[in-house]
Length: 478
View (cartoon, helix red, strand yellow):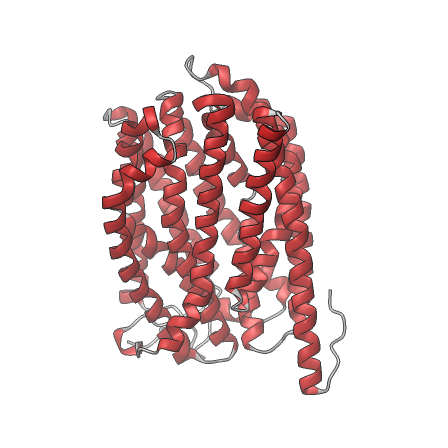
């Protein structure tokens, strides 16, 4: 079925292009603003769900909140693969769109979806076999029953979680951030509605929280399939006829997708190290504080992540069109924009930290966590301003297909810097729980500066190489 001739944002026009494509291939500063706006809204809604979910679970007691903390590193493996393939698809498709290779973009999208199915089957089998031993290995111990009650249902929805993230990646590649926003918003709203009903209304507890997540993601999967298979008004066509297997396309997706997945594995590894560290210095209460507080941190950095997501799409299109000089604009502008937002978030978090902490310590069983939660949130205020340098720089590498470099930066950040400094300050210097918090901050500062310098040098070399090849000079465009 041919693409429909409509003019809504992200919808194909009679000329075969879309508003999203026009924005994506236009002025890079305007593209970053236009594309990141809807993503900020969508990701904020999803983060609100995650925070509200933690708040509802906190009502079940500190052990329930800690149980989710132990499941989170394993869940990050799943999210890693889904976001990894999605990032690989976004980069590969955007580069083909920039090169005006629409058939190649369609074929790449189909390769990404087939990879999704294959990975879903393998991961589901692995979770069925290794879930309990993995949770015990990372210290779930006395919370293992609660952790399994939650995890068995969550990982039963592996196919839906992977599919939605890869579908979002396809939409982002063509600059259709609004439709991505709508889908993510629907998922969040369904979750928010179902959480209290299933957890408390039907008395399902931890199982209710997990089931609400799976139902919401499955519902959105149906919506995405409708857009791709029946409505067919996207720029990228998802049709069996578009698929022609080519190993080079698989390699192109995976050279970004696998390192991006590996980045989440590194985050999971860092989470395991930090969970074990907090157990050692503060018991399960330390894990509960970190789990609840980190939900707030992830909410706070949503605008930076959303801008970084837009940077991948814009960078991919510019790289595919060989507009290398404008990559410097994308890098510097996105870091500057993200830093201004981060500073504002730091100020707000510092002022309202006690009120935010109350959300996770509103029951008699968890009230004693309030001082530690407040202290954790205020410590993280020094973390936020250095986040944009790392996120935007990694996005530059992912957008240009340099996924391995992005992975190396993540390795430095999560293991060499954050986990190392947290352990050093907490144990070696005997600063305990607060030392681990400051180790996270110090690790982020060092890794952010490294990532920014590396990406700036890479873009500079790319521009100079192109100048030598074409015999022209690129004027500074910041």
